[in-house]
Length: 169
Image (cartoon, rainbow, N blue to C red; front, side):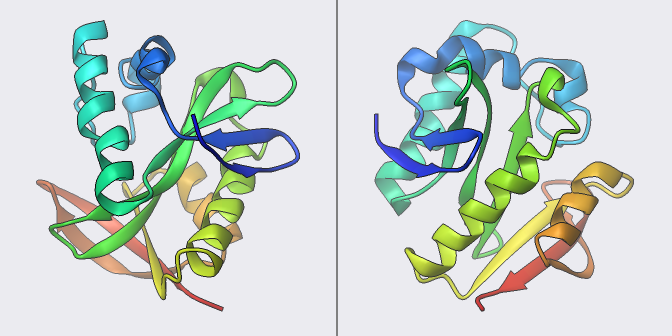
C-alpha cells in the first residue's frame, strides 16, 4: 500500500482490498451518507466491488483517487480524502468523508489542504472542483477554509449541487 501524504494527524494512503470493512462503514452509515448523494452499499460484497471499481480503479487509470485516511494516533482507518476525475464534468474533484466520531475536529480541512497542495504541486493540476449539497454547512465551511470559491449551482448525477473551485496558486 502506497503512502501518498502525511499530515500532523493523518496518513493518507491508497486503499487496498483489505480495507473492505472500514470502507463498508464509510459507505453504509446513514449519517455519513446523508450529504454525499451516494446510495451507499448494503454489504461487504458491495463494498469490495466499490473499492475495486472506484478508488483502486482510479489509481490505475488516473494515478490518483480517494485515499484512505489513517489516524496516526490509533492506526485506524477513519475516513478518506483525495481527488477524483469526474468524466462527465472533465474536472478533478476534492472529496472527503470521515466516520462520525471524527467529525468536527478539523480533519477534513487538514486532509483537504494536503490533498490540494499535492494536486497542484505534484500532479500539476490547474484547478480543483469541490461539489457539495446545498445546506451541508460543515462541508461548505471546509471548502471556504481551503480557499474554494462558489461558482454556482449545477446538475450532477440527478442532483442540484453547489460547485466550488480553486485554481492553482
